[in-house]
Image (cartoon, rainbow, N blue to C red; front, side, top):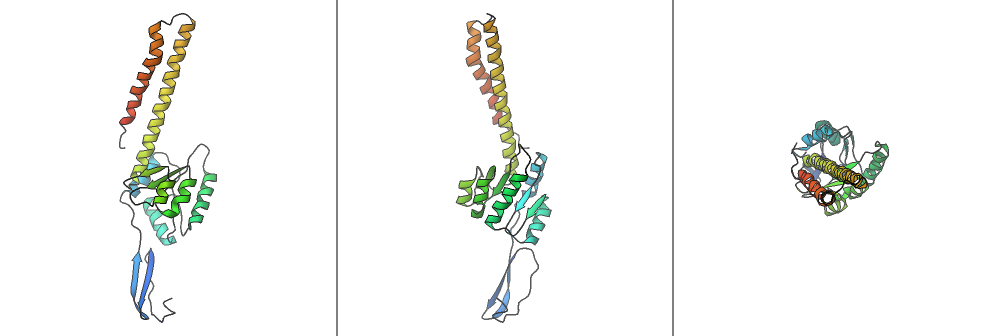
Length: 217
């Protein structure tokens, strides 16, 4: 386009989106647009790997150079650049096919183009403060302060919650089976039957209260 209007333009090799500007056929310069990594992004990736996340992949519509620099800086395992919204969906479908059995694929995004992928992934996480309404609507989880490091915290909370829920199931069933056996043998007085109902409920509630105290790290 610069050549078409006779403007003598100069190439910019900086990673990012370059907009060349000409006024009345005279080249006046270029504008360099580039995304800035969130301050805690690198720590977020490290925390996820520390939790046992097997693979971290970045899907972006940015240029190859920008994606390569960002992926290397954050320590990502894989990246795919210059993707259209449909390309992102195709990549996610491929990742879903490749993932190990009994594992989940989590996608994190904030743009309107991410909405189809957020809905297709096993778990979709949207950035609430700056994310588009479409992304927030399609996501399963919304981070209201836009801090990627909160993803690892959400995983820790969910794992702790599931662990406590399974403990409550085991406790309740074990006690009730024990009381049932004692009743069959004729050793179950009325107070033991009450304990099997109300007592087990109180124990499970107290155990569930542990979920209120989740460590930051």
